[in-house]
Length: 178
Ligand code: FES
Image (cartoon, rainbow, N blue to C red):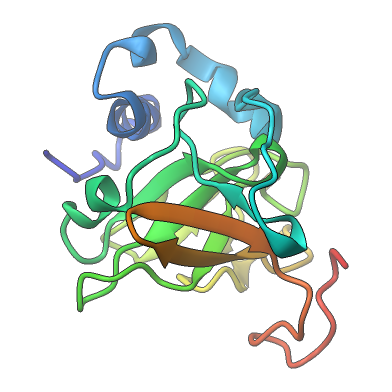
C-alpha cells in the first residue's frame, strides 16, 4: 500500500488515511468532515479490560488486527478509532512492533484533526498552522499544549488502547488531560 502523503494536497492525505482504515471507498464521502475533529469516529467505545482499555477499531467499528497495522512499513502512522472514538495515531517502529504510546489526533488549539508529514516528520495542523514533533510536543503554535497520548498494547493479534494517566514522559509532569 502506498503510504506516502502528497504534501500539497491535504484532502488527498485524509482520504489515504481513511483508505488505510477501510481498504475501500468510504473515503470518497468523507471530504472535509475529518476537520471536525474527534467526533468523526462514532463507533461506541467498548471496555475490554482494566483501566478502561478498549480494542482499536476502524471507522466502521470493527476491531483492527495488529497484523494489519504491522504489515505497514516502519514509520507508518496508522489512524485508528481509540478511546471514546477519538482518532488516534499508532506508530510502527523500526523493529516492526507498535510504539506503546499512541498520539491522539486532536489539535490542542481548537480541536482540528491533522495529517502526519513524513518529510518534515511532524504532525501539521491545517487549520491554523500548529506543528507537533513526532512525540506530540509543540514545535510551533498556536497550539498551547502537547498532544494527548494513550497507552498501546498488543495482546495476541489485538490492539488495546487505554488512558495515559501516569507522568507524561515528555514533560515529566502530570498529564494536562488527567
Ligand atoms: Fe490546530 Fe488551530 S486547531 S492550529
